[in-house]
Image 1 (cartoon, one colour):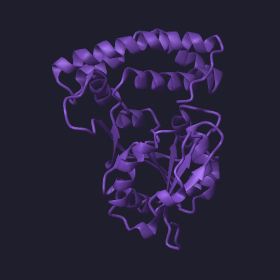
Image 2 (image 1 turned 180 degrees about the vertical axis):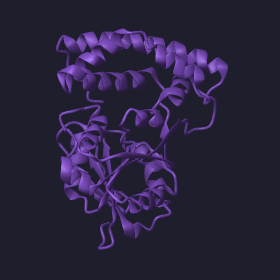
Image 3 (image 1 turned 90 degrees about the vertical axis):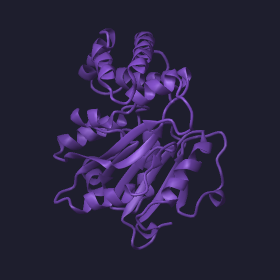
Length: 292
């Protein structure tokens, strides 16, 4: 709960899948940074079943956002947050014990407000051999370091000082995808830099089914094809039609998987590219945006 010593506000959107928060809450409970220095808001975004506040850990405050979309939910959290550093992650993530401590230390060293992107590692949370989809996601999913080179970071592990929001405004709540890249680039256009802190790490569970990969792809394509400036949308459309050779190259260079697993990743990536073309055509024909 909030205290006079509050310095950090954690904001986490959630839609359905409340069962995943068990891992998240255990990880937050284990944080090395004193709970007196941070508060946590989890923002439900229209789930069919929502727990009561009394069922949640005492360091979590439940909010509800009826406007669809995770960026709208994050903006709801911003309305209530009291911290000077706003920290974002996802409901299915597992922050490492020193996550908040490292972020807070980095923030205190800043001479001017900067966005901080922490490391994201995709892995299989359960024991056993990963299936083809998990293998693909561990090799290709959420490459934060590569995103940083392009000037943005994912909100699975992104921290933004309050002063940045005061200067540039909140997330674009009309988007279902890509709002993290958009706000990072908007911040850069206003003189705020993005720094990478890989050892402030969260673990993200590897997607384990084709359906999950397709859901993510459709959400991303909706953000690319139907949101943002026209020039940028045209660029994404043209890029979709080109075989993803650079992704094949990235997979082959990965040190996260074996040579045999790389063949699996290439097969999955090829199939995803074909689905991507089909989804782009559907969206251009005014197809409905996928929310999740």
